Image 1 (cartoon, rainbow, N blue to C red):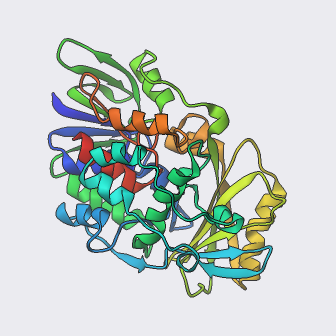
Image 2 (tube, rainbow, N blue to C red):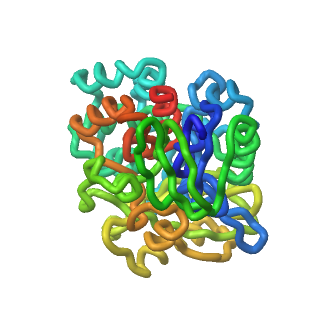
Length: 384
């Protein structure tokens, strides 16, 4: 019997495994990382979705977390966060040149979870943004229903932290994490959890590879899959009208631009896709990551590709992933990315979900809004 069973090998599951001992981790796919993982095509490793990590300065908490646990890091600092390419107005701007306020909320929350509650009732105003700056805010806290101050304050943290883009994508980081965590536990890939039963003082875990037992669960799953494998409606489900699908283009390049990471503002009449990023990697690959609500069309695809043409990038389109791809390869219900929308009530829920429910711990972006590795690390520090 294991002390912990970790269900889901995305970054939420991986950072949990870094902190734990005597565990078994179940991952249904061939590789770890989830939406931040990778796949091999044409002998190249392509980043599946997420491409960068915030708070990676030597004095910032994500870097320190990895350093404390001996994780090997091979990345390039991207101190400017990213450049914004405004296609319609033919401009390239640096975000730090137009935003000047930063309160480092995530850093405070990491060191003391009570700071989240303090933050919720802190109504201090920050300077108003103009419409262009609002359009420039990234997807980490998208579809916010809270007052815009929350959106601004939490978003600033990302921009003003030190960003890292890994030279050949997340593959090396994931392999380094895997090498570290197998010292203290076991990993089963291509092993899907079918059902979990709560018995007297342990959980019985039925998988496609057999039956396993554990005293505690770490569930790095969306709420639909949590309710499915537990056989009961333990978690409230998000409003699907407020959720997003992923639309990701995978390409190769011959001559890379000077910088690795760009945020795009597309033509204003393209309403169906949101917050696209372009990431260039040293192994010759490109990931263009964006989101859409209910549909997208060829006009959106062409608009993304035209950005590369306008930058004089010679490229080859390899493949495209959408909601069906993400559902198939990550197991996320309907391929949804991101979790609960940001609101005061959902931030309060995120705080109180830090308390275990009968030996069950919840990880992932459905339980701490933020949709990033930094949020997963905050959760792991609170929970485990």
